[in-house]
Length: 111
Image (cartoon, rainbow, N blue to C red; front, side, top):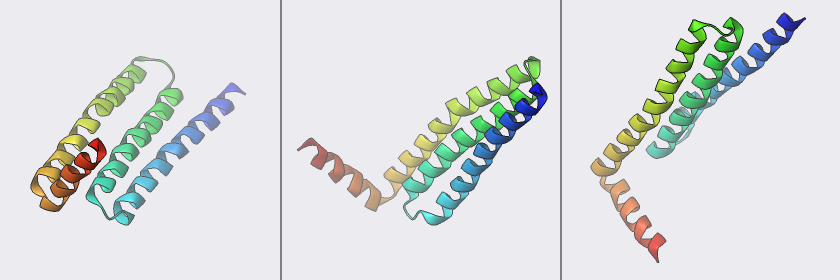
């Protein structure tokens, strides 16, 4: 009985992860502004990978492989936002339209 419960928990969490990846791809194609696309991909990667690996950890049980999978998720959660922020800063510094928007948007927020 407990194997069936574990199976359904893994299936639901894996379904959430796959749904996050599908929504990420849809956001990449549907959103027009480059910053919105980066946000969709960053959130989709973090949540989707977290759900898929959590399902794999639950399916395999608590062992050394689970620790390795957890360290993989930890590494991705630390590096993915940094790379997304780096790419967004490059876009702001190289695209004059965005730089103008960001600069004047910050000045309006101060008023």
